[in-house]
Length: 285
Ligand SMILES: [Zn+2]
Ligand SMILES: [Zn+2]
Image (cartoon, rainbow, N blue to C red; front, side):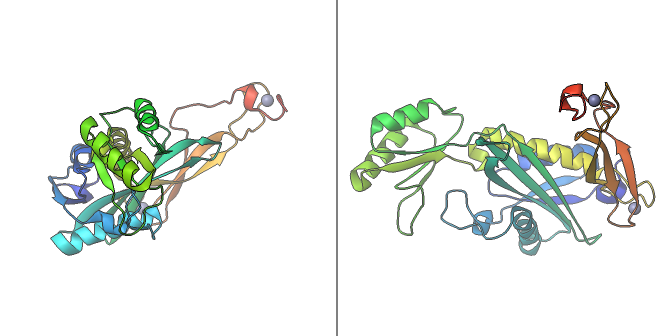
């Protein structure tokens, strides 16, 4: 798969205050021939923060695009990328948390906006209300600390004027903040810091998202050779291995071109041609 020349030798602005260039840069250089990744220190928190001081008003995809456009407006250039993550209950098992990462690439040269969604259940996301140091200690003992940092504040919902301690990674600093909050409010809320540079599990998710996105961008339209011949939908109906009836499982993916409208149906990426009879409505009603 030849990388389209669209992105070769260009400079890419990465809108981040949280070191996301470490995760996003390598696949874009390796797979798309980007010459340089330049950090654009946009105040991305003004589009909404995990710790609640700034409400999130845009949908995640729109927020990522707004950050990329802000990078171009403030720091110049013609190619910028940004990401936006959200942590949501996993619909089939709502006690599990899904880390959903959107990446948006704004290309001023072509006038195109490319986006990619990546989701993983590998997330370090937890919070608890505590009224004692013992409760705090038992919560922290359940978390991968100190590889991951914490946020402490008086209550789950932050209010204007209240303190918030972010990026807390040092046990003695955590104890001091917790004692202050318990003395002043009689309770505290502690949660995992979700900012990428404080949450290595999330940084890995962003790296995996960037790897997938770069592979997709490097896939050219077979008709007009434009970049990003992307998966636009999947088709169900993988035939049952026993009876041959179509199942609910994905049989094929359809890739489409946003430039010329070409569409092609392609087999599953994993090469599977048949479904296990366990997932067949005819064999296993
Ligand atoms: Zn095309
Ligand atoms: Zn069957």
